[in-house]
Amino acid sequence: MNSDDIIKKIENKLMHIEGGAKVQNIGYVETVGDSIIVASGLSKAVMGEEVVFADGTRGMILNLDEDSVSIVLLGKSAALKEGDTVKTTGNILQINASEDLLGRVVNPIGLPLDGGPTIKKGTPMLLERIAAGVIDRQPVDTALKTGIKVIDAIIPIGRGQRELIIGDRGLGKTAIAIDTIINQEEGNDKAKKSKDAPKRVVCIYVAIGQKNSTVAQVVEKLKETGALDYTIVVAANASDPVSLQYLAPYAGVAVAEYFMEKGEDVLIVYDDLTKHAWAWRQICLVLKRPAGREAYPGDVFYAHSRLLERAVRLSDKLGGGSITALPVIETQADDISAYIPTNVISITDGQIFLKSDLFNSGIRPAVDVGLSVSRVGGAAQTGAMKSVAGGVKLAHAQFRELQVFAQFGSELDAATLSQLERGKRVNEVFKQPQYSPLSEALEILSIWAVTNGFMDDVKVEDVTRFEKEYHEYVQTHDKKLIEALSTGKKVTDEVTTQLKKVTEQFKKSFS
Ligand SMILES: Nc1ncnc2c1ncn2[C@@H]1O[C@H](COP(=O)(O)OP(=O)(O)OP(=O)(O)O)[C@@H](O)[C@H]1O
Ligand SMILES: [Mg+2]
Image (cartoon, rainbow, N blue to C red; front, top):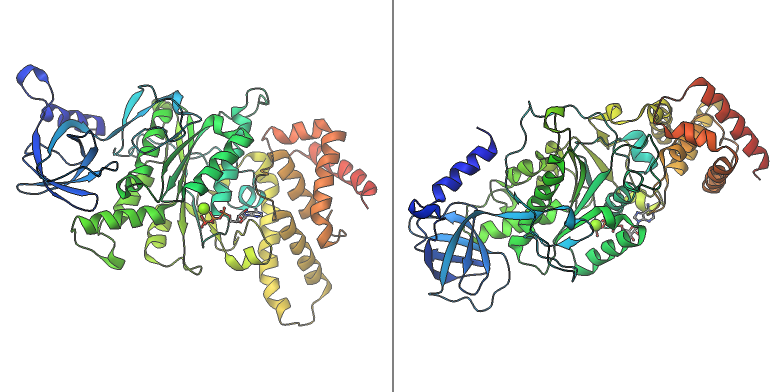
């Protein structure tokens, strides 16, 4: 029995025999607590069902006790009091999904937050649904390009993968997610779309428990770059009821499933799941559920695992759509072995670990290449990227090892020294400003040039300028080469020869 059958069964149960109308079980408010209402008389209520109070406030059932139920409010209500009536609706919580949502900012129950018109009725999607099973899936084999050199080369992300972005406060976690969204323009912009470009990616940014102003900044940036056209923002901010913060990621993935079922590729960012765990802890403490480690409820792992399991690459039979998930986790003092971080690390297919010492020493994005992994790896890279990524990975790994030696100030032989110098330049190339994701062709140019020694004689502090001018030079002088590098196909000997020629020409002009 698949999830839809189960839901149908529940709905049938809810249907009253009389005229087939849904049961309108009416109950009374017993106590009004901190965003939790206890009501009696709702004998036919089911877990997760939506209820409506007399003043129109919506709620969701979270505890079923012998003669009462606990309801979390899905909005603010100052007027609710003891004795008020409450009705069941017969609906498990849903969100309306349609193309109209693109470019909009909504809350987890689909109400607009951007001052725009109400969202037209679309397809109701269940917030809680069982993830696709093994047979319904296929392996991840298509790249989801972030446009960030260090990630695309060393920690590649594939469509259908779950990759965690983890690090302390203010190290650029959101920046990586937003740059990835901005970088999906290639597939979405019909005018710019080349014939080899992969299919479009619909993006969903779920903001959980953040400040209103932070979310507004993100939305503004997406608007400015044109990325909002293919993005949906689902936000439950710090000032919103904690129930909405808890529901936000499920609402986001429900919308993602709507697009995925149409065969589309979706990218969803959960920013961040630390605050989501806090929200769930808060609700459970008020519901008086037993508290476990660090006062989190026993099912906090399940809260995240059932969410992230919904990231999937569907089989061709089911349309071949995908959901790629980028959950974000905030750590304290670089400690990835705390409770929630280890939970989410174990659920995802790899992590991008940002470190404060790298960030402070000017390496931005502050990705710790040694501790970051992508368990999908090369399968998620295009042939073109694969042909240059191996070399840079090796150069960087050697550099990290040698750096430790170099610290002791011991005498180094010439070969070691040159490896160190190369590594320094690789590090420089991996630096990348915010909001400037690169096309794959330009990424390959940089990586190829540095690993093949074309930057060895450039001063470390000049590498950034070298790279910028190099990109401009090739873009104006050899469009054919850029085209060849944009196909995603393996870099042939012919292309390599041309690369060498153009790079040497450029170096003559570089001072
Ligand atoms: N690649 C980059 N180059 C330069 N500055 C960057 C880069 N990435 C991020 N920053 C800067 O670092 C700061 C923190 O970035 P961001 O808000 O993305 O971090 P965060 O980890 O999401 O923070 P929080 O924990 O508060 O959510 C911002 O001021 C941002 O402009
Ligand atoms: Mg952030």
